[in-house]
Image (tube, rainbow over all chains, first blue to last red; front, side):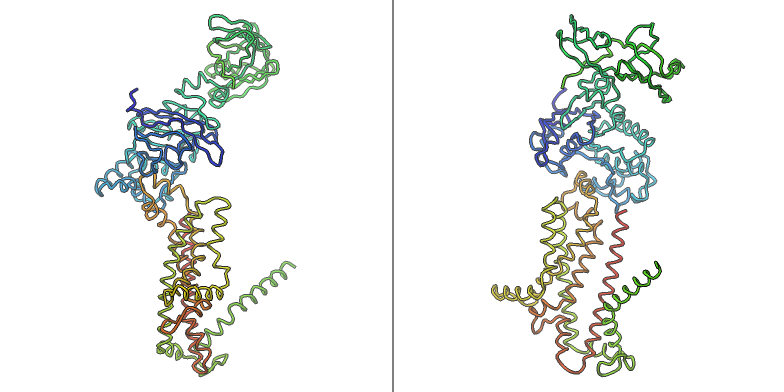
Length: 356
Length: 263
């Protein structure tokens, strides 16, 4: 990737508030057209990172570039971006059309062109009929779309989204996820998205950075971070994982045999004999069978029917193991609480985690 | 039992209102008297004292001067108060509290001492005249304007300013295109309040007015020292009360507007 195609670059950016470090040495490159998500629990520094790019906060150390221009010390109104805020932040004293045209007005776009582009932007979010309404006359979903139109109409180098779907109810949120993604694909606008909702991040992103305590723990494509989490935090924050601890008893050719206390597992891992390892297995990768089929012995403790899937909670010598079974056939529903079962997984489904 | 408590409560409230409003009501009633001197209740009704008021040059010029002082000092006080409130609302914790006390200090400072202090100060720097009085009234009116503007800024969603900035609006355009159009009821109420305070102010004016630039309260005060035509004062007071009521109702309406604007 040539350097010129990077739309947002954070170089070793740190930010402290009153000696508390909210963001620690974060470096990120976002190539043109990418939908990039910052994912993490509240207080992990994701919003601060976004506000640093927006210019509402200034970094204690490091440098920020938007489309190659160093903006570290540039005020927000001279940076080439626009933003959708968590509670939309529509101007209550302006109509929808005026709200959308605001950015164009600031850029001194002449009146007729401004009106035309504002109209087009409202049409893009399917709200052309509501141009003369005021924000308080609109539903949350409609306000959300106007906020999006207002941000996109200025054709920014980068679109910043601060949990823009957080204020909507679940159904509407899912609709908007798809709509937003479609729009972003169509326009090709580089997007930096902040969310604490892992499903939202997986659904929308080209690339996800998982943040914790001001540090990026892992960056990768959704599938990569979901299937190959590097740390326990990533494995548990992004979806659900079963964790196992063991000690390596034999190691050769990139595979290791691990003693779990209740059995032996073979992992794809370069380790040394005696090394303690912790690894994760996704619940949907765990296979469940009769005792006779082989695997680790366990007992069914609880069964939860969830429509698409059935969640089965196993007790394996005091360890809880969760298994997600697809309800494609009625197999999953054949189990009963108290049944003695055996569980296993394919070798590559077990992901060894960094000790940390 | 509850009923009795209720009656007692209402009675106390009634007495309190009577004590506050009673004297004013007497003055207002007497100003419509047809009598030559103060008698209550008035023997008959007339508008003669209002006619006399508007025919007395010193009264009308004092009235107009008070209007001018009030308007000028209110505008200045409101501008300063808005700047101060914007600064304070951006501070956190202790700084915010300290600055608020500082900006509202003139409220608790005895006006008579302020008047004397300003008189001595103006003498030393060779300043005075109407400008000196206006400056003093800016000082007295600012805390009121500050309080009201601060209240409206505190309920103002600061994210809107960030939204404006993210769309390319600098500090000036952000203020005039977004902040002010939303908080204006508070700003205007603050200005009207400052005007009312200046319009009725006596203590400081006693020190800082002079021949040719007397405010209405000073003129009324002066009349008290002479016998005869005393009821012209009642007429002047009634006019003043009427004006304050109109302004107070306007403020009430604006504050209501500000609340509606918030939701």
